[in-house]
Length: 121
Image 1 (cartoon, rainbow, N blue to C red):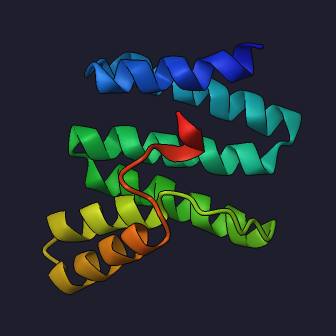
Image 2 (cartoon, rainbow, N blue to C red):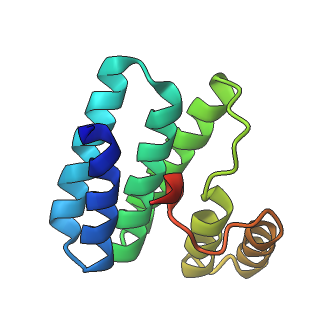
């Protein structure tokens, strides 16, 4: 039950600007998912962490979390649509890579990621 509620708590904390608490919740989730060997959930937790870091303006950490999430998803052949395009597009814009940002945000729009957080929370 806790693993079902914690993502919601993390999202709520993020939306209310309590980044430190959101990071704590998502790091706990990540550790639990890794311990359980639930690699698909690890992908989602890394995306959630990327969202928190992005919202804090820490684009290098957001990018690292996003890249780890993408690499793991490729390893386990996870084909589900994650917020990679949305977060990656935002990172690209903040790094001044406007064409990359435009392309990634367009991709997010096409695949139906209207800025929604990973995992539906």
